[in-house]
Each structure stands twice: as C-alpha cells, then as structure tokens.
Length: 248
Image 1 (cartoon, rainbow, N blue to C red):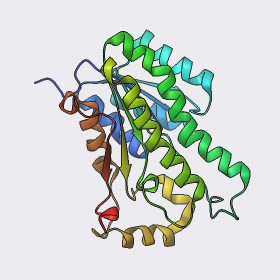
Image 2 (image 1 turned 90 degrees about the vertical axis):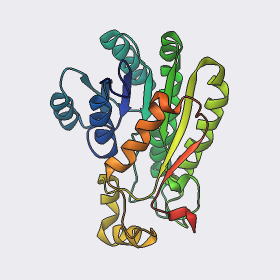
Image 3 (image 1 turned 180 degrees about the horizontal axis):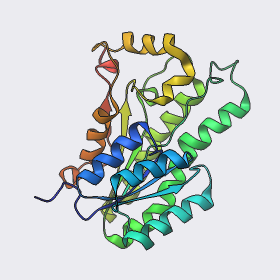
Image 4 (image 1 turned 180 degrees about the vertical axis):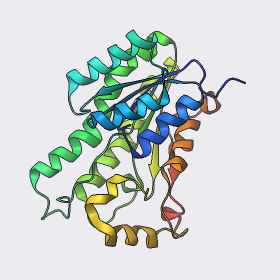
C-alpha cells in the first residue's frame, strides 16, 4: 500500500534533531524522498544515514540566500523535483528577554533565521514546485505568532511575521496549485527550550491546559497532513497544535 507522500520530494530544514528530525523520518515512512538540512552536520548526516537511500543531508544556514539556491538545485538534481518544503529551522535565544533587555544583534539573528529563512526558502522553492506542477509549503510558526507573551520580543515578532508571510504567499500562489500553510505548536519537548532552563520549561508545562508539552511526533503528524493530498483544499490557514494553550 502506497504511503501518503508516495512520489513526493521534500526539503525539511532544521532536520538534524527535534521536530525536523521527526518530520523527516515520518515523511520517509510515508513514501517521500527527503532532503534534510541543518547547520548541525554530523547529527543531520546520521539521521539521513538511518533513514536510508530516500534521504540526503545538506549542511545549510537558512539565513543565507546562496545556500538556499544550492539546496533547491541539489534536491532537484538528486531526486528529479521538489514538491514539499517544511520551513522548520528556528532558534530561541537566551538574550531575547524583553524589549529593553534584548540586544540588537540577538534581534537580527532571530529574525534572520526564523523569518528571513522562511522567505528565502519560499523564494527559491516555488520555481521548482511550479515546474513539478504542484507543491505544499509548511511554515513552522508558533503560538507565539498568534498571542503576546510579555517577553521574547524577537521570537514573537519572527513567528508573527511567518504567520502573515504564509498568508500572503498562499494567496499569491493559489492558482498555481502551490499551497502554503503555517503550523503553530505550543510548547514542544525539543532542544529549542534548553537555553531557557528547567524552570522556564516547567512554566510552559503549567501554562498548557493538558499540563504537558508536546512530543515532536505530535507536531510532525500535523505537518504530514498539510503536506499530503488530503489537504488539497487547505491553503493560507493556521494549524494550531497546542494542548489548548490559546483556547482560554
């Protein structure tokens, strides 16, 4: 029985660990060929090796335009086309602590990875999707892109930007059979929480009505849905996976 992504080719950024790794493994299980990218080259190569011949790892800084060109070109040359992009790579910096307390370089770095990286990914993957005749772009935002938090100004700004950039792209490419959606996780038990310490992580747990944060696989299944033909009439929307966080 064919998988849900049989015949598709996906680029997944930030795929060396956490959500990106979970997405890459799940997509491959569902029949996709997968280009994993990350700045963590040893971990990323290990994940690709474990997935097998259907996976390729490329070292990739998503904030750099020339590296996006290389990644998309390599994906097309290796697997024949690219039909899915998951803009998953993201950072959360300890220095991002408040409007007055956040250094300008931390602001710029956060937006460069979390927002500019998404823009560049779409800019360079759309021509490949157009050539393939269809595409699905999934931009990983956050509940921090939908509600304020009283802190983390750079992170909130970047994820809010991803939300509206997604909608703009969805409208622009709707007639070309290229769908663009955003995913908004609540707290997820991945390495992005590590810089903030166990106290902050426990606060995140307590803030969710389900009294826990998500596992990476729980987000990956939502991303899989948006990537699959089952979501063929879904574009410009927000998939919130947050254990009830913004329901209150």
